[in-house]
Length: 79
Picture 1 (spheres, rainbow, N blue to C red):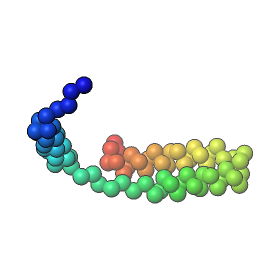
Picture 2 (picture 1 turned 180 degrees about the vertical axis):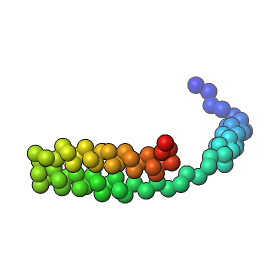
Picture 3 (picture 1 turned 90 degrees about the vertical axis):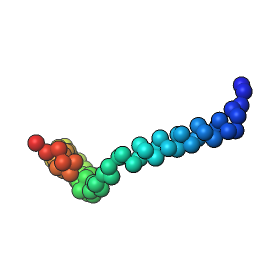
Picture 4 (picture 1 turned 135 degrees about the horizontal axis):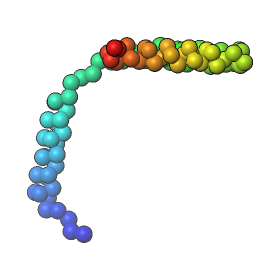
């Protein structure tokens, strides 16, 4: 395997850096999503499962629906 000429390597490096800079400049900064309600509801689900294992399926169903709705609203894709 032959090595590249140092000048050619530097030129390739510069072109890759320029392309990456252009790509990153085009991306819009995303708004920070707030995921704390998802974490809190999952923690409540764990506690519910520990306290009442037989009825935990209903709590997890409610948690799943709540989290899905929250993520849809936060992402701005609500119908």
